[in-house]
Image 1 (cartoon, rainbow, N blue to C red):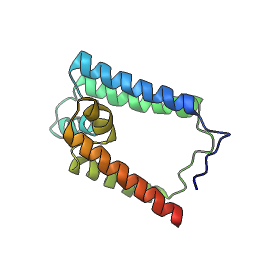
Image 2 (cartoon, rainbow, N blue to C red; image 1 turned 60 degrees about the horizontal axis):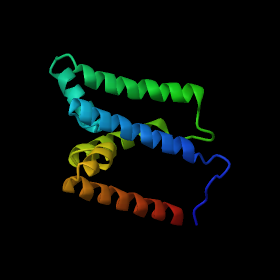
Image 3 (cartoon, rainbow, N blue to C red; image 1 turned 30 degrees about the horizontal axis):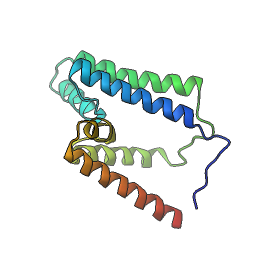
Image 4 (cartoon, rainbow, N blue to C red; image 1 turned 60 degrees about the vertical axis):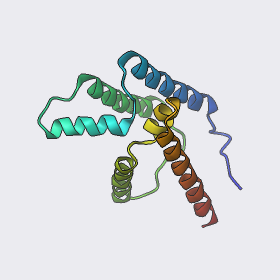
Length: 145
């Protein structure tokens, strides 16, 4: 059985966040011809830095906007009861594994789920089906714990 904290359930902020992601991905694609896949943007930026090249302005602005928006949200509208409950080292290892997985899967959830599916990419459809099935299986197994 799933428990929902109805006191802190915020469908309108989730809907607004999803709409903003869709609008920004659409604007980047339509106006700039770019795909808003975070792992690709971050990977290309890190590759530029590794080669000693100044990062492309739009990538730096996109990544900076993500960081600044997150900091602003945390400062002015923190999520009630949000906590990770895990040791920082475990979170760091999990982050490295997620990064490895996004490289192995040729993209992240935002790239495949938002941008790839909207472009009717078969590779993205397979990727989304795979990570959604894995997430559902993991959540189910953890609930049995």
